[in-house]
Length: 475
Image (tube, rainbow, N blue to C red):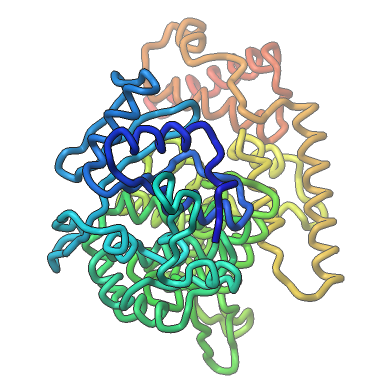
């Protein structure tokens, strides 16, 4: 197949000329070729394989584009990288690899183009286009990658069990490509993942997380998450999510199948938001249920407190997966902890105080919290779904009205702790904390408006009361 059109860009003309000067043959391989054939946006990372030294070719290219100072060489791996415009070009000599059982870092030796294509993870990533020489512009496809692209199939070039045992991260990559491209993993390849799933333990959490994040970023994360569940990787990587699977029955009472419900919630969020951590909040929002489920003779299954339990469990997941423990963790934890609160506001005669408290506690996360709650509606009863969404629309309107009036969201006390100490000649003490808490509660309960004048008046009265109580206790 002639793919000259794929290599008309200036960067390939330059690489071709440099390859001629190095007396070698160069090929563009992998993701660039795959995405060109799929008519997808082309990647900014381009892989170049040459017959000989990839480092020598990279040095020649860096000199040609006057980027010698930006050349990065990895001698141990025989690779080098050179930036070119918005692109990152990686050069490597064709090689063959062998692996030890306890490591995904291969032993490498010089090989042919065919050897190099054999070491690729999937047939659709083993495609190469010659950049110079007699075959310039020709596609080299020894494993039927083009046919697999047209059929939407993920398949390994060689025995899948060996492929995944050698580098277990490829199992996550197979699932990620299936989710991104909405392809099917070929049956023998998928069975290879199932049989080698335990090998994922030798892969760093950072590399696993990178693939998991890419799955979560896809338009329908449930595709990848379901595949992880079916092959056994979910149980090993996110056992808290895996534990949601299954339905228990006691005395005729059954609870909802929470795993597949959760996948629906994640997809619902993904349709409305590209926020990665909001998607994770959806994935984890029910993980406290397996630990809190009980059967009540009247109510059936209950999951009291599962939100707070799930919020605490989330920190352990972040620590285990090496995810950031700052704002992303606090964001996900807060959304999970508050995930049942908006539903409680949909009942009639809910007090304004309840709305103020949610505004106060959710702060900047309020809109995402309501989106999560709306996404949690997975009923197949169309009329019920409409009713639930109407209820949340009413909650949104009421929250907006109260915020407009009371300015509680991201609330800061109209009188600071320092001012309280100065007003009453106090040092940092329990009494100062009591005055601050009393002021906050009075505003949230609507006892006083959220303004400085009312706050000062309230604090003076409260201070008198506290002082009188202390004097009474002394007597």
